[in-house]
Length: 175
Ligand code: ZN
Ligand code: ZN
Image 1: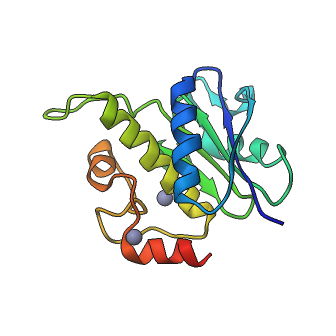
Image 2: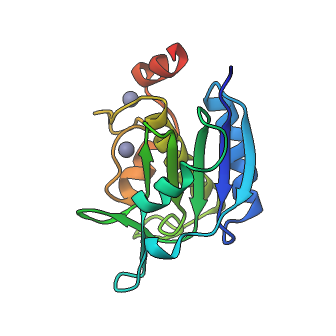
């Protein structure tokens, strides 16, 4: 049976972002993309001293939503972190086929890089494709312009954009 990619979303995610992801992810990956339900972030994933949510706890919860065997991406405006990292743009667990991305830091600007609508959409898509790439079995790619390159900062994200390099693309197409 063919797998479906489900998009779950927190209340603070704009409809336009979900529409962008729904249409573009279906072009990138070989699965139909469907909009799931709105989700609340679990209180026990929130760490008040950091004002951040622990990404792995959100993934754990996500794994219990929807049919087994399907892929799940949660989108939130909340800031995420995980063990050993000040923040994460997103996180994926290939075993449970669950991923989460945060929009929180994607609206930030740095010198020489004013935020435009296009840049924002570019970043959202890059982070989503990266995490779902992990769900499809891809690891990190050494090429800085490939979407599967690890992002430490927005500079990395803006350098790589939402596209796979030739090698990663062929792995996706062969899966
Ligand atoms: Zn990664
Ligand atoms: Zn690559």
